[in-house]
Image (cartoon, rainbow, N blue to C red):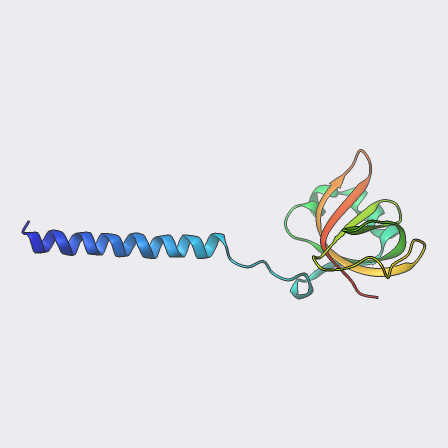
Length: 131
């Protein structure tokens, strides 16, 4: 191999590594889909959904499932609210809970992140208050 062939090989190898690194980075750090753009898997009352999830929790907690629930606010903190004492919604960043009050009926959409069958508590994140 002459020196020029080695140089071409090294330049080609560096280009292949750089392109591969860029593609891997783009795939790993692609932006998440907004909740508002995702398909809603269930729409209804919080009580009805709790009964449905108790039947088969694994089918609801695998993958990214979005639900739209209506219920009564039973607790609130700085980062989220609880509906019907069993569903906790972690609100999207920048959302305030000051205008909400306990006992108020509300409609909210969020992504399921887990279900604790021992405590029978459902947790959702990236929640958006619809009314």
